[in-house]
Amino acid sequence: MLNQKIISRGCKIRVNILCVCILIIFSALLYQLVRIQIIDHKKYSSLAFSQQCKKQTIPTRRGLIFDRGGAKLAESIQVGSVYADPFFITEKKKTSKILSDLLGLDKAEVVKLLSKKKRFVWIKRRISDEQEEALRPLHLKGISIKHEYKRVYPYEKLCSQVLGFTDIDENGLGGIERSLNQVISGSNGSKVVEKDGLQHQFSTLKGETVSARYGDSVFLTIDCNVQSIVEEELEKACLKWDPNSAIAIAMDPSTGEVLAMANYPTFDPNFVRDSNPAERRNRAITDCFEPGSLIKPLIVSGALD
Image 1: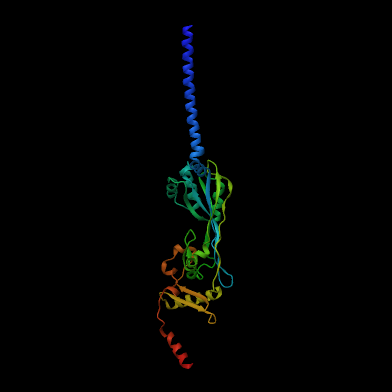
Image 2: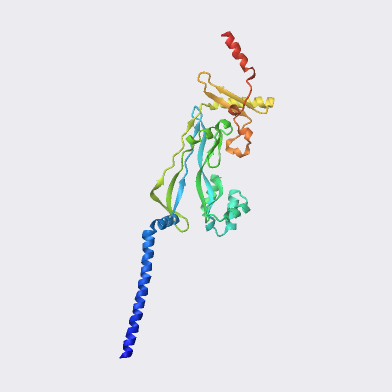
């Protein structure tokens, strides 16, 4: 009888200890639940959002530049750019070989890019339509194509110093492109998309999209026909007399509007890297020159008047 009482008392003690342990465990779990759901709710919501969602930029489209008659002197066209997430690329040498062959890049340089400890690396920007068509069906793991805008100048060298040029991100760096950059550039938009563990986008969150504002277009007083004639005649004169540089301006005497502004030597803004600063400078508005005998007709006309 005594032994049974001792055993029963021992069982009760063990049960009580077990209950206390369970109570402590559940209390700790309850505290953690309250801390995560209530106390640190904002912190963990933000962490989950950053892991499950991604903010993507909606690129703006730069405004067009026209001559006085509506001829398109500068425009932006959509092209593809290739980027990588090295974290998801397991066969770096194989992927580098494919990319270097398709995009005309150095294989060693591509391997170096894919070996970086980053989640976003540009491989090549502004690829051709043919390169995009060849690359997209391959579905290379960790390789994606993003669409951007590229600035093009349909008339090539015509009016190049007046128009100026942009960098790879379409920021104006010279001429009208720079002086009216805030008017022409516009502003990017954004959207928030949900993604899975492999970074694949599968939906866009409603209410989380800001539309891009396209840039305004600009009309110049330049007349393409007059500009073309002036540039041709200026080039002929330079080839004949071999000066270091030359400028020519044609204006409407009734209004003072500039119909043509030509410089020699000139450059093609589509391939600005192939030019030098002297070719890109608009000497008509940046360089000083002596008026020379231009003052004499004014004196004579004043005397005749």
